[in-house]
Length: 260
Image (tube, rainbow, N blue to C red; front, side, top):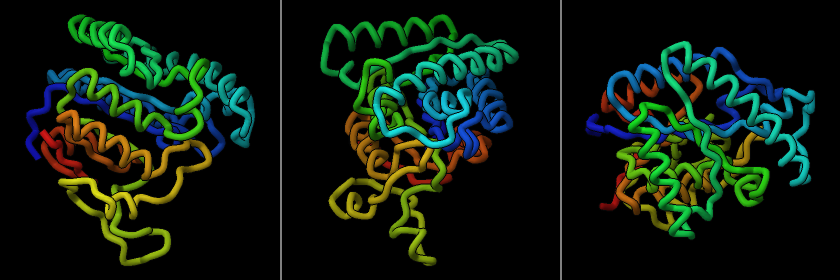
């Protein structure tokens, strides 16, 4: 994979950012910020799509079990989002970078004026050398909060900003040819040139208790991104150093090739 990417969207999932109890995984969080700052210093424009608001809200309020009620999840997200942005702002600032919060809903692509305004905001932030941090506006939106953990939203953002690459950092290593929890001989599929029914069939399964995005939503994200001319990589975000490998042109997971 070529390493000439000048604009990258990186999505980090709840299970990557938090411990089992919902509290932030501070060591991983700080390392992620440091690496993203370094990548930005190299001249690559970065957009971070960050999940974790509900999980962090749970940790902040001492709630161990993710609620089923949408209203409760929205309330937890509002608490957690403040905490998340506070951490991001302070940590990025220590490396000389300013962050900007952008809360979107999936239907931003359905309204031309909203789409234009969002794109203009992103472009202006790039001009100002700020790092946009995007999340679903969970207070008013219910679709992603129920299922997706921002996978779909990250693909929409990648399309919106005309990114060269979308990276999904998750708690899985990539797309396997069969369920690795059931089959010891399961192997990662290194590249996918075309998403067909066979790919969709092996993408079954769900997410973790802290997040909601399983492989199905990641395949949906890949379809959106690749159709828009954006390459996409799914890889394990347990060690954020993996981002250096990607910017150096390596493929440490599954690469979905753009269609155009």
